[in-house]
Image 1 (cartoon, rainbow, N blue to C red):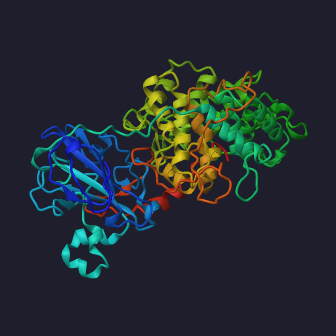
Image 2 (cartoon, helix red, strand yellow; image 1 turned 30 degrees about the horizontal axis):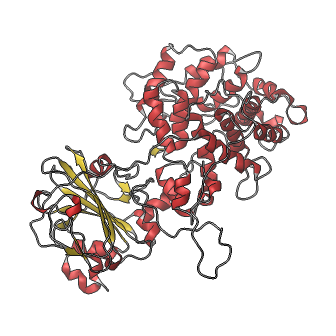
Image 3 (tube, one colour; image 1 turned 30 degrees about the vertical axis):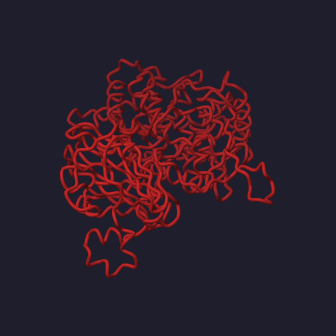
Length: 593
């Protein structure tokens, strides 16, 4: 329901009887909890993507989170709002980031109702500024409001009171509206809760592979870094991803040809084998997956023979180096060797088993680390090791495999379905973990939906036509906050990270494991995304009437994305720009770069 200008709006259509109040361009949807039913959560979205003032209006989304909740953050999540992946760092709600709309001062500001969910003060004073999002336990019957603000002045006015108004240009922009009275929350009014939004959905492995394929084809069948150098590690990841998705056979062959003639650019010269063996192992595996012979590498070099030449008597490879002789790299070598006539030497398998954390008192019991040890448990390493042990013939019933799988499953986030690694959930680690635990639908189902929530779709392109194109469809962002960054700034702004994330996320979308993935029998072509963008008539006298319109409307609240307002106990909810900057520096390693 929208009301323009200073016209009054009533909430009769919300199922309540409430006074009319003058509001500007206000759209209210959804509704509050009945008394005692749960916690009412409200988000006030700005109606424009320009600098906000009170005249520009709101889209107000009112929902009920039934029952009791452990924190305010949890209540918003429970009502279906997409709040990001951290209870103390929420820069985005349902695809809207104030820092993107308003510049670096934009943030989400949190308020709580003044009396048991029903205002007892005058309109305009019925909300109290709140500083505590993560740890405060909300009370049933209470109401909470997030609103997007474009200036810290509002926060300071709310915190310091009316005296601060003397220092502000226009204190009126900080008035909290609509009030509880205007929302029909006074006197126990209630309405049917709105439909929850969801950022999670089925991921499309084929479209992800198609996007990777387009990245290869556009750069001479390899992945090229921003400085013009070839990223051979991610190129190999892309080949394996296409094979996992079962598409792009022609592109796989073209890229594998480039890999097979790459000389020493990635694998190094034979005299440095004792340190370059992880790259040799990954190159050999990539060629095998593509159906090429690693024993007939560039210049007649035999990569399998190279790998075996640095296998030590204890089963490890290369020089003694705690950051090189790790389960992750050992697994790559074993994947390459398991496809040869000689298979994996038993001493290599035994060495790998000895790297497992077996201390029953450790919370990391069953894991494999980087480097080895209970104190350095690593989700990615454990994911690869589980598959490498099975590929080498260790049965699934072996206690080492069961222990590793149990530890890995324990790292899944119950709310999002993503796997926790490197300080939060991310697509790369979730893809590897879901691949390792394939067959357990209770684990892989939520993981696939998590990955799906990070994938660029046609709907996202339509909602972000200023930054996204149909050529971006299928790409998978690294993590929820990076998804917001990519949709706001464009895929090119985080291209290296998005390529790596997409290549490894695909592995967790129901394809084969590392031990069996192969380009043999895959479809030769890549899928083509079907996406019709809206077309609007040009201005009178304009040219090119058939050109797609570039929408200037921000993402519709209720769609997907994540990130967050930073909201600390005892602190202010205003650090969104800092969270974005820090997030930009987090690049996950590609298996072997």
